[in-house]
Amino acid sequence: MTDTSDKTKSAAGFRPDLFAQEAQKATGKKGLPPVHLWNPDFCGDIDMHIKRDGSWDYMGTPIARPAMVRLFSTILRHDEDGKYYLVTPVEKVGIRVDDAPFVAVELRVVNPGKDQILHFRTNVDDVVILDADHSLTVTHAPDGEPSPYILVRDRLQALIARPVYYQLAEMMEEKNGDYGVWSRGQFFPLGKAEV
Figure 1: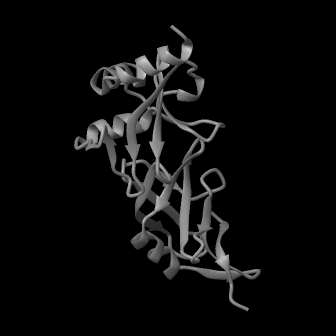
Figure 2: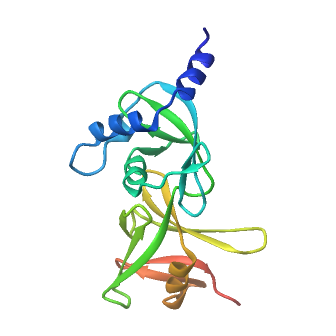
């Protein structure tokens, strides 16, 4: 059997429950697992999908258990090849992601004003502070509709949900021809100021 058929066979026999058990063992109790250090063999792509709204499904069926989604989110990796993988020390499988794997669903502002700190909570309960290590970017669709993102970790971004984006828009200021927001003493541009 060739390597390709072996990879397809392994992916076809994927069992989310067993994969989750292996992931649970690997994650332990402290913090996030070191997925960036794991280099298992690629076992193929599986029919797991993260939709633009942050929901996950497997073989077309929604994954309804938040704890399972949270567990899978901790072993998610976005490699330099642009693809997304679930990784344990012994297995690596490819999954589909429509946009960003996470959605920023809540914004908390500490010490409003120029010295404020912006805390974002994702749909999988990661909390990220907007700072130099967790930057803000905005892309635009052909119709001009903005899609803002915050970097959560290791090339994994969260799409900022529309209500949260509106909160950001309410606190925007203009600086050097850009509209943006402050967090941790740094200015993060959201778009060009109208001339």
